[in-house]
Image: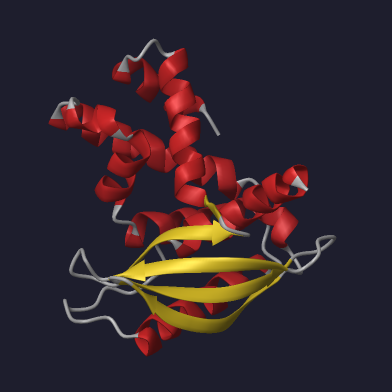
Length: 202
């Protein structure tokens, strides 16, 4: 069961990384459940279109990277992935880490787009949870049993943003934080060395 969840988390990473940043920017306002669901509906539709477009792997990778760079709240997501060491990092290090982390995610998940061909994610429900909205969906990928996916949406940054994704209850952001933490340990706790690792990882 653990291996199945791990594979599903990896397969959904491409969806997650793209969808994480595929939400249009809106003026600051109270985010409603209907708005959150509408945002995810649109994002899922756009990503499904790319996945099943028949484009080459390289072309799909470029589409994914464009979405990622255009819509990501990269500094906030990068800080979360880096964890406590972010408080000790200089502004220059944070900027370099953010760039390296962005490239790492683009390479890691962009390379897996071929596995998503013929797959689809369907939004099924949405509800408010504390200060954010949870949009629930079902993922159907080739060779996999359908599984639950939950998108966490908030407007705390002043724009509607999807800030995490749960695959069968497993947080993608927490998984990436663990990956980055392991790379930081392997780098002797040195952020500059971690950045160098991220620049070629994925």
